[in-house]
Image (cartoon, rainbow, N blue to C red; front, side):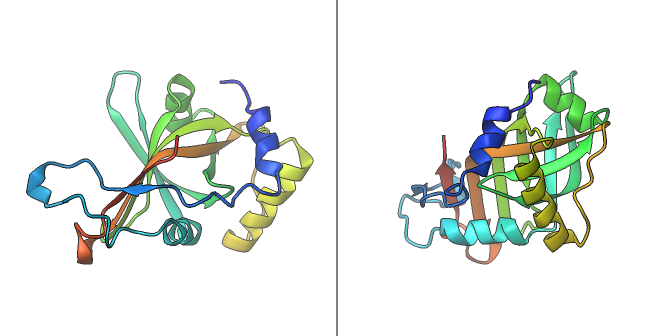
Length: 180
């Protein structure tokens, strides 16, 4: 996978991370879930972004070469409208991403569900401004510097579709955003 230097430059733009409120809709589910079409009660994008920022762990779900799923929790950040996370280049998730950049990222809670269909690109963290910003976020969130070594890779998982709901008021709060 080519390094996303264009994406890295876009991340540095000052106006990134201020995504306008995307149009909210309902998840596509069978009628038995009682979804309905009314949008009253759907989640607010700002609340979803806050939940993503506050999350300590993100589950990255990839697909192995033989089609079997692979899921692994990682530390990461909601950073400029995407989940940024790192791993070793030889890990199963890195090998899977190199083969197919389409992943699902979700948070830990089933009671406050957040599921994102994403496309992953590799970030060029040799760019000083980007690396400094990521290091600052890492220091603030995890109280440790951004850990980058030659055998590691930093990814940006940009959501294309986001699903979110709260169990306590499902299906009323069930929301779907199509971002691209």
